[in-house]
Image 1 (cartoon, rainbow, N blue to C red):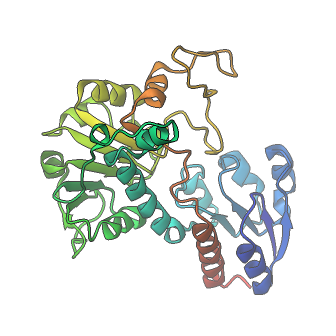
Image 2 (cartoon, rainbow, N blue to C red):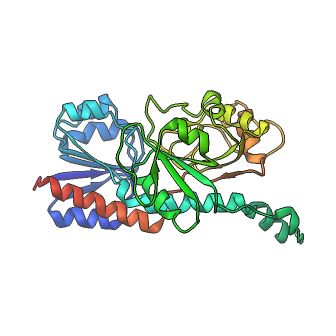
Image 3 (cartoon, helix red, strand yellow):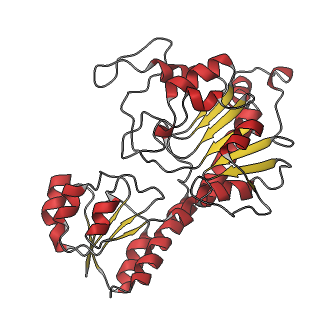
Length: 327
């Protein structure tokens, strides 16, 4: 059986699939149309986020037995249509859950301890201790929205910080344990000092964090988002940052990302005024605010992007393909 690899992956994956008896072709440069033209020749395909795997694309895969995504989310794949064609869909959230949990805590510690500003000041010869007095996670209530692999990993990593952890998941129940207390969204919005998003991108979650959602919280809070950027309406978040309803934000993902997560729709040039982008448009004012705000920590969708997670996701894919017993 032949498998087409269309995104670069760790050698653990390619070596593992060959070890299972698959014949591999790696194609990292052909256009989507060129990939579609030769797709009927393959029983399997491995992708990260190079382009959407939509109905038209899937229809070309007349021999496909599985599509594996080296990642956690599957929003770029037409899942119902693929399943209607009896194509097995594989993802690997087990592989990067720890990386996401650690990254979320790292961003939060950076925000609470003013590390971005303090580091820049010391490098510039400034020694401002009182102005950089920080906050502690201890004693605060952390609210986790979405308690899958990522949300549960974040809860586990919070152990030892002396904080209370609440979690809400619309589609799960009975998951309360030593790490977390299961709760309703209403109670989470009542008690949380810190809110961390761990939800997939779907029609239901697009723009979920808007003004109404934010204003439903009983007290000002800090927002952490290592999930999907389009779950947050950036303009509404900025309004909340300006008003003090949101005290600070840690954003590994942004509304402005392309579907491939490899770039943004706008060109980023952190200047005081709006700057023309590649498309001749201006940078969104909301994003301009984020890049200048001292109480905002930003990173380029790398929460799950570690050396170890790359290896673990690769091995997870190999294990799941093996379990299908296609060969």
